[in-house]
Image (cartoon, rainbow, N blue to C red; front, side, top):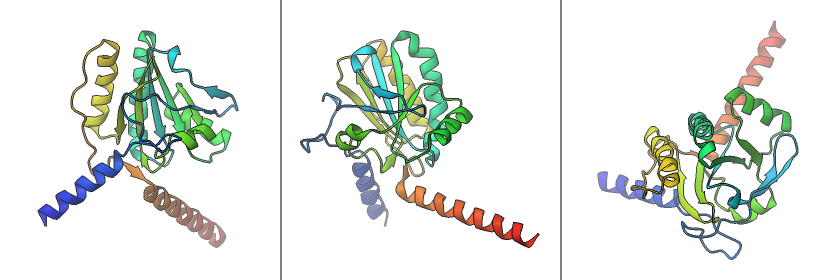
Length: 212
């Protein structure tokens, strides 16, 4: 049984870290040029990312229903505040179909001021695989090349990511990547479950209101 569990965990890990494909169907790996990245924020402003404008860019794919994402976002905000003057740029990207006012309200509640926008068509086309397992982040250098990919947000992973930002900016080599554990990655199943729970809460509230 233990052997079977290990095989299952390895299969899950390999699936999570299967990198997104570019337009040619080739996997985007560390060392590859980052695909075209653009989208509109909660104010309707179009952002077209030029990676040469920052020493280091962190692309963070997230969602409002992703609990690990919410754990990670305050650390990303702190990193932007602290390391921004040294050349770091944090960018949050969501694939969600969310209204502008709802997105703005969520970011305000979370205290997020770094750039966040919804995925545009180029991201949907080139950054394949960034929707199913969240959070999903990429370190990208000034030359536009992918340095490292992260999937999940355990306390250990968040600490490693925060440390990696400093190491890259200071020219130090990165250590061995920490893999996510159970509950450190959110999937579409979590989204469906949360939507079902929310619908049940609304239905219960309506029934209680009608009965009062």
